[in-house]
Image 1 (cartoon, one colour):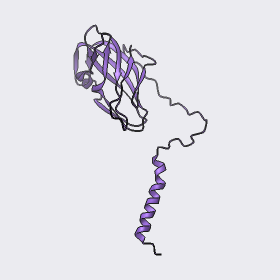
Image 2 (cartoon, one colour):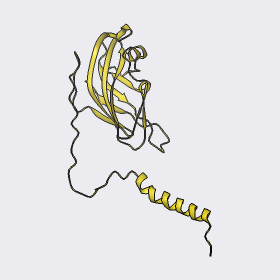
Image 3 (cartoon, one colour):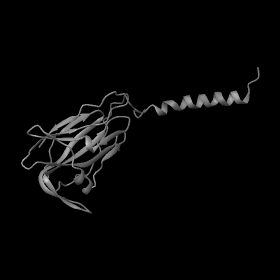
Length: 187
């Protein structure tokens, strides 16, 4: 029986591809089964900004995104940026968010889907002008095992008090509907 070079090449290609597949399976768990404790990352602390409170234990999950509120300030009457300044119609509320994608695929954070809930039960969308003036993202691709932090800006009626922020991740792979939001109580 004579083996043709083309058939041999095709067979070798298939064997090489099959051998490479385990490397694509996400086997980051080399050494899994060992009972050694993994070390923590040491991320430098950051000073809170003027007038900002630093809430603790304010986290929630929506799909693969874990959100933590790390800074909060309400009652601001103006916003200033590098290229513009603007007065609020009511008062500005700023929520500093840490978002961590715990999934294996990209999550898209859409600023315009997020909501601030005031004590009267009303929900408020992020303020477009404040978001642009402070140069915060409109949409942000958060890669697998990636973390980002940024501000959400809301313009709420004067005298309104914040009850919570509703944060939405994007649907996980294979999902047929949008995920439930993480509702994080504030302040």
